[in-house]
Image (cartoon, helix red, strand yellow):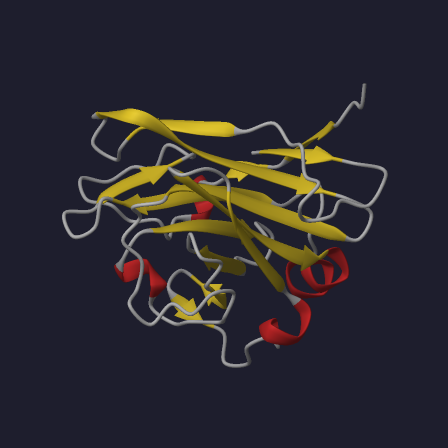
Length: 200
């Protein structure tokens, strides 16, 4: 999983990041338009950026930039970060209006008994990119990730997207096995790689 790195701090409203795209759903059916995202890291934070159609059908309780449970029942982008040595992983959900949710898991689909204080550490952003597109992002401190899952070169990651609610299409950057969508497969996530951003 590619993470673009910047030696200087990144700031919302001035992000100029390469985008990655998902072009087919869980069942191999092509999308009319790619679903795009970016992962970037500066000296202090990991940035998870999602590009959404302005018509995205998000959770009715999704308040802009607020922590909201069960976002995955509607259109959402998801970031998974796992520690292969311990089996622990983090899940972050993000919607087009910046509503977000997160949880730590001690093993597959088993939430940790003690959850991190996500809302104290994580910042959410959102904006209208055009008449047709919304952009949203999570700013996650690296020291927080280091503490929770020993984030670094050993980290395994995945980006997943749920779109077209209520029919719902399931997309995954990692090729995950299974006849039916199941995003909670940390053993099949991709090891992170770091690619420096080059300014002109």
